[in-house]
Image 1 (cartoon, rainbow, N blue to C red):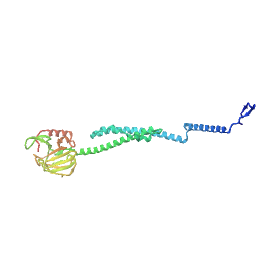
Image 2 (cartoon, rainbow, N blue to C red):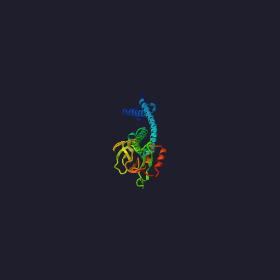
Image 3 (spheres, helix red, strand yellow):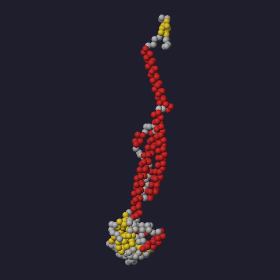
Image 4 (spheres, rainbow, N blue to C red):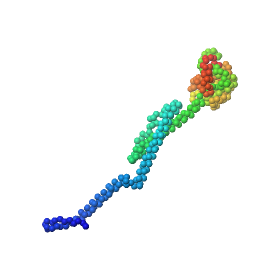
Length: 325
């Protein structure tokens, strides 16, 4: 039962009942409802931000976020391992492979450059775990670029290795006359006494004495450029172009076993010892040319003689005696 209130009317000298207006009652009711709604909203906001009142969906999302953090942590550990392997590969590339093939190393300013576009990672910003995702993405991109540069470098090294193999096969690296057929090294590279004029003059090759008909071998892979007797003094002779600036010449042959334009490999029989042209006896006059200049053939015999044999041949070749042509 509502409480009845009275006030004292001094004019009538009596107590009169207080009557509340209807509008005021409605106002109070609306104010109460508004306050209740506001209080309820504040309680709701407080509850949804309190972990004790998580919904199943909230708990599922929280677990997914923690799982993603764990996966990113594992990924970063794997990236550490890959970084270490990439660094070791780059070290070998710069200090072994490129030095061996006489190529300049790739500086770190290129290898470790990364990406300079500031807008590249803009889409990853503004999230709760943006820094974790951003740092990991940058590491993956940087490593991918480093591996791309390293892959290109290894492609270059592979090409150089192929060229190196061709170079090693092309270098005139063996004697043109085998030891079992060789009587002696009659004369070496340098100034010698001319057998006809008896004057000291430059001898551009080495003379290997052997019986007429002893086989003469190509000293490196190449293509026969000449097989004729049109050059003065050489008689029947052969010129092989090996590539990489190398040529070899074999003179005073009795006959040929090749023709111009023919491809030959190191060790192929290309002709036979003779004494044609300006010659004092059966021998093979042998020359090596590099970039158009004559060089000492003795510097190239590493393919078919031992160290002891090399020393013996070197001593004979360096004697300033009379040449045979």
